[in-house]
Amino acid sequence: MFSGIKKLFYKACWAPIVVLLLHNGIAKLWGHKPSLDPAMHFLGGAAMAYFFYQALLIGHALFGDPKPFARSFIVFCAAVTVAVFWEFLEFIGGKTTGNSVQTSVEETMYDLLLGAGGALLYLCISAIIKRIKKY
Image: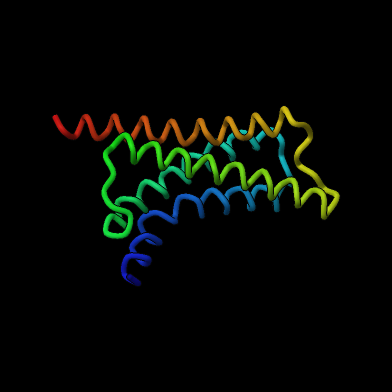
């Protein structure tokens, strides 16, 4: 069990950690940059999709081995769920600190679409690479 968690950390956790560190580094150096926010949400969606995809592959003994479409569906839903909860945290953080980064419902919906788009792009690229490797 512990070796599976260790493998998951080294193989999959690096992607979301890199996005978080990049986001926090930019915020610390230059403050919140609305112009970079879309890229961070898009990369975050892709990083979470990568994480969940790897988690399903590594944890097949625990999760089973879903068919490729089912795996992609699970990964997409999990990554979008993380995006929704990220927006919840932005909302709560803004309300408690008075420094809201959510300027409108439209901006929040755009962030969610970008997160979903990043996850979808990762899954499409992953499927294309698998198909190429078959031939």
